[in-house]
Length: 91
Image 1 (cartoon, rainbow, N blue to C red):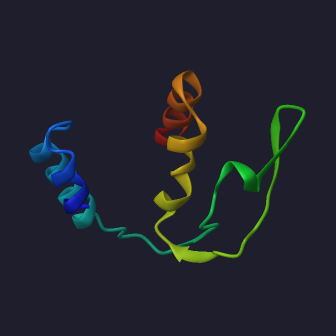
Image 2 (tube, one colour):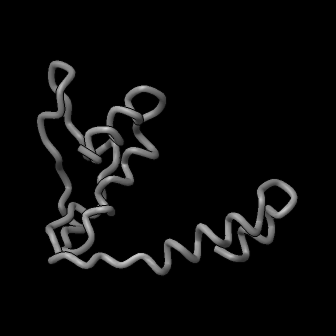
Image 3 (cartoon, rainbow, N blue to C red):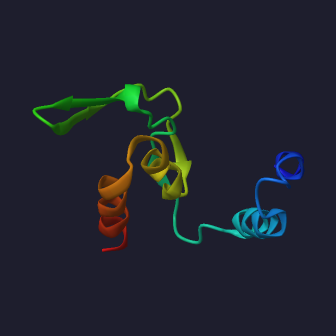
């Protein structure tokens, strides 16, 4: 990550990016581990009538920090849908 930040230092605020990266490295899940899908990608989400109907491909099923399974929000959702996802997570 530091190599990438260094290569992008003329594009991004390198100090801020390093601070965010170090904060992420220091983050620790202090609750009991939960089951995680491990590969929540658009291709693994089946939708019927506009609603999520199934999640497939459990080849990376693990136990750990549930934050792993919300990364889909950054690749699948945008705009209002991402904000709604974040709102519901904090509720």
